[in-house]
Image 1 (tube, helix red, strand yellow):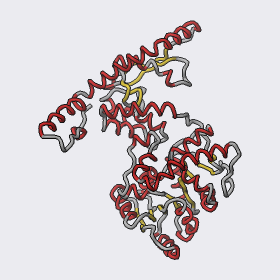
Image 2: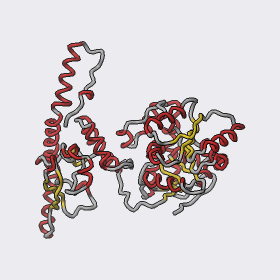
Image 3: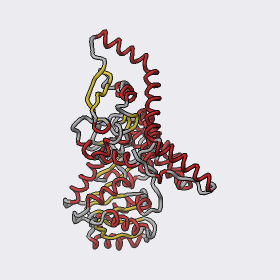
Image 4: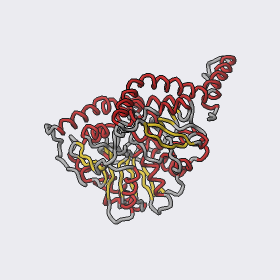
Length: 451
């Protein structure tokens, strides 16, 4: 598949001749040779995989033959250029997908598939038509970016969107990155089918829903008559709630309390109640803006340093021109000005209030001023404004897929974040395990699990 020459970057300090030589070599390796190199990798690693797993495969084949059961399951799939091929899997291994898919190495060796590419689709699936010829220009893969996103609890969009992102940036380096990220995904992934609607973490009710369900919940509240609060709870939030009863009561009283971050995912895994998605404010924000476009509902942005909320408002106008910004202001005002700020929000007619003051200040502010502000939905969004104002870049997708976004934040602001992540994460997990063993109880009591 063609790759843009923009992917080839040459160090500025290299001599003119050296730059030309490096450019030529990089062009051949990264662009002209992408397809043949990818095929060479497929052949080498598929052959090696078949050789390593041959004893196991022969034992399975013999066992299935003796028992009179079929050895292989066959199904039809859509390959490159729309060509149909037969995909092979081990029969009788439905609960062990990694073992079940060992015969796919035969398909890779035969050239029907690659290790990395879009998911092999069944004839007639809409996802094949969604991306048209672009999807059919590459071989389907044993591993795909959509598969990674699902196991990283980041499957907010649909499979076609993930495929487009892959197709637009396909390269040997990108394929190798996906392949390496698949290793921890296999180790730490879990089935989310049948996950409970709520999960109790250290006595807090976590609403275990998807991004789409959270947005629909907000939409319904915006069309109602009541006021409500949405919170995003991560490991740091839970730690603070264990020693700050007032903040804890804010979380317990929230209309919707969403799971944010890998810490909650690990806690859910320890409880054997998997967290369905990492529904954090940074990912929710653009989808919220899209939902509000043309709806007659408006946003008010409160918090951040001077100028930051204004920059976020400009970002919204540039990306979602039909989303109304009712107003904005920074979070630097005196306590005795709270009533004036709440009155300003009410006069703006805003439907949704985003408060970016950090934990626990933003939730406590909302609790004191929700009624006066007059909004239907108030959401505490932490450092969201810093990302969308451009003040702080967000971690790349591959780090988020690995659950390591916190390491990026630590490198950005080590002086402020080291205690939260290097000590706080372990403190959270320790508290969680002691709570489950019934030897620890947070200050402020328990809220139970609502259904």
